[in-house]
Image 1: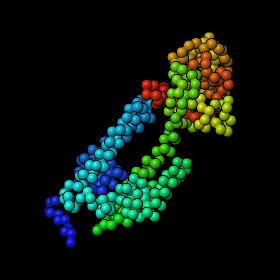
Image 2: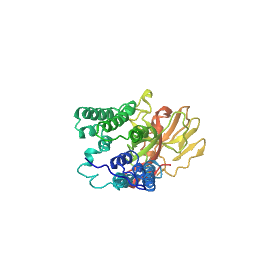
Image 3: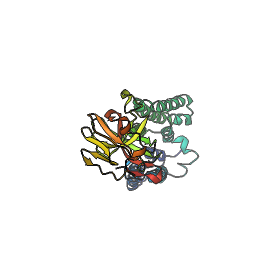
Image 4: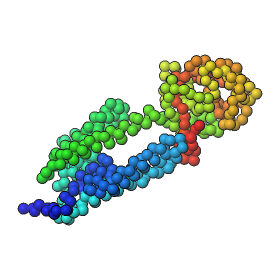
Length: 356
């Protein structure tokens, strides 16, 4: 008969290394806190939050350096892997080699199949040689994750399948005693974390739209193939003179399809509804006042107006005035065509800069 490990007074109870790994996989630093290394767990958790915040700021903030943010993903991933290893290593302290042999612990620790199920639902059951339920969970998890790309309403179902795979794997694994409270906390963390991560591809496009500059009409401010971030804006969002906006081409896009993300153009707002605009003597005049334009490379070689911008419309021009098909050619831009305000060149790396 196998002897039961004895815990001496003042000695901490043995911890499950794979429970620690599961906790750290769902919430970095949580496994260390479970092991009793509170300070180290907090440092790891804070470091993860800080690196994630830096990555998001670098990529999406106007002043952030996109390349630096992408490079920071490497130390972030490295820290996450270290977090898993460290939580496992810390939990092994106090457990003898015989009690925790690398040759036997994976098949006897019920938390190991749970970790596999965190990687992909069903993997834990396949490890336990339960092919039917494992295959069902694996196929349903992958299928719903794929379908959720087209229907965000399936996101909660995807996270539930992931959590169900973890819970069922724990129930199916052999164990002398169960730690149901820890399982409940873990499943809550898995659901929350997976839902946040899987929601990112749907939340980000609501806040930021990517656009590739299609022509030389905005030189020297924007070059062809510059990739820019655009903040989507509603019809009632106020615009200002000098803003760079992205909009659907009014010559090619019917009004009922205005604002959709194809046939896009990039120009600068020159005049707002009710303002009187005129191009003469190589300059732009708005309400009789000369418009200061340090971004324009050369004098304008054509004349236009004067005309008053009608309600619900904008007067837009490219910075490369003499080589731009814009409002001086096709007229005022209907406001519904506007997608949003371009605020940053995020690629290529040497061109990264805010657009003011």
